[in-house]
Amino acid sequence: MIKTLVACTALCASITAFAQPPGTVATWAAMPAHSWTAPSHMMLMDATRAGSRMVAVGEHGVILLSDDDGHSWRQARQVPVSATLSAVTFIDAEHGWAVGQWGVILATRNGGETWEKQRIDISVDQPLFSVLFTNEQDGIAVGLWSLMLTTHDGGRTWARTTLPKPPGGGKADRNLYHVFADRKGGLYISAEQGTVLKSSDGGANWTYLPTGGKGTLWTGVALPDGRLVVGGLLGSLFESRDGGSTWAALNSGTKSSITDIVATRSGFLGVGLDGLVFRQHEGSASFEVHQRDDRATLTAALIDGAGKPVLFSQDGVLTVR
Image (cartoon, rainbow, N blue to C red; front, side):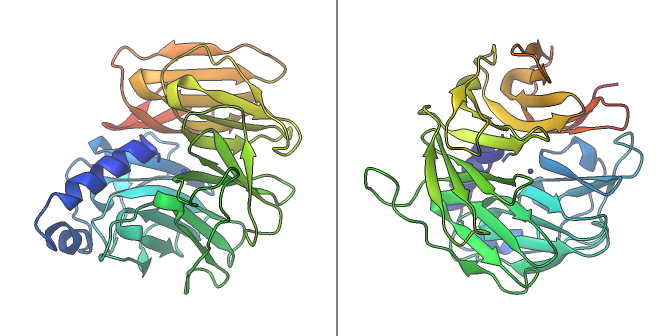
């Protein structure tokens, strides 16, 4: 999971890239990732599980691995790019994919130890913000200006998908920030202007679902109890109990923007800007809201074996024990 701040950090990186002499940043981004002395203190954008292993991705092509529930981290042995990586996903303990700047897509078959490049387009920096595979063959990656790529052969080939125009007219050019799936096979993408996109046929066709909000939605999750929860700008949070047909606004108790939401054993946890960490327990309508003293820019979270969050940020891994 821009998260990454998933989207904003990636967009800022794009602006920086465009300001450089032609070819300079693109050439550097396509080079293999450097081995850093303190990689766990670098900007990290997303994290996920590969079986029991934790995997995090971030700036300069950094990919971190932890086999002790987030207590210690090491860098992946081989990453073929130095581009900022925005998101990562695994379908099991071995097979995973990561995406990021310059539309790069990486794949691993050994739990993240080594990665191979499946795609990069250094002619234009149209970053990918999120990636999801539903099995070893079928995957989708989404990003800037409604960029959507799909594969049905494990990523050996990727094809562009053209989205329909949004309701009310205009171009299909909204930024697509986070793709996730429910247990019934539905695919969802949190996007701009308070919109969630949904596909019920594996990504072949998409519809726009208005949540009632107007701000950008940076993240979303399908909970085990069937609820969908999406969040984003200025603490906006929306919930659906009918597969996205209708949405209700939730009072998150914060005005800090939400960058990631993850399911927990008894509800869900979210993180965001200004050191925001909040929880909702199953069966409760209220939230427990906490703000870290360091006001860290939190980008992602994972839950460890003890049920406690491991936090990822602009400053690297921030554990909460």
